[in-house]
Image (cartoon, rainbow, N blue to C red; front, side, top):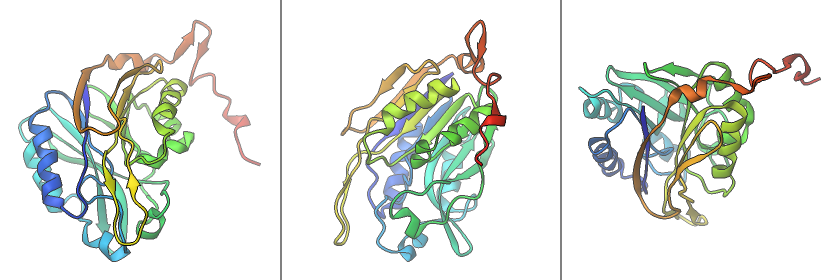
Length: 264
């Protein structure tokens, strides 16, 4: 199976321009699964909730989803794209999964970071796993990495690969994803963005890049630079994520003792 990410610098509010960059990456990608950053269509540093709502769209009927479906049509490809989702009076920081048969599903970010708590509603989808034929994938969005329960639930539900659209500004996540893969014996594809955003009187936000693919044994298969756009792909053996044995005597998931994990 061939998986990849597209690390780039979305321009705030320039939805069509950002979509053109995404479709260009899709057109130049040869593989099975491609992951894009969080809020890849809108940009990140909102000034008001109304602004977030204006840059959001309905899923799956919005124009971005429709154009992504058209870009993938006829190809055995699945993409995961981060975007702002509007549903009635709520706006969600979401990731959409689109494949050969069109729209496949949505995950809404559970753990909101910093000012996201002002613009977005906490996700209400729970942690989902989709079977895309050659693999089972689970979706996380950015700050979800900080909560080990999120990755663990996806592993328990059978995910082989964690797809992780991100807009990372903290330095810890790339190394932390090594631990998430080790403790769950799964692959992870983190697609981060690069560049800087500074809007209004706010402090600049500098994004750290370092998009990466990590293997179930914690090996960093590839890590991008901190500053440069990159479209990357590589072959993985997805069956490595299905053997949870650490040694002949220990099975990572079967050896759990959930009766002792309850918070009193």
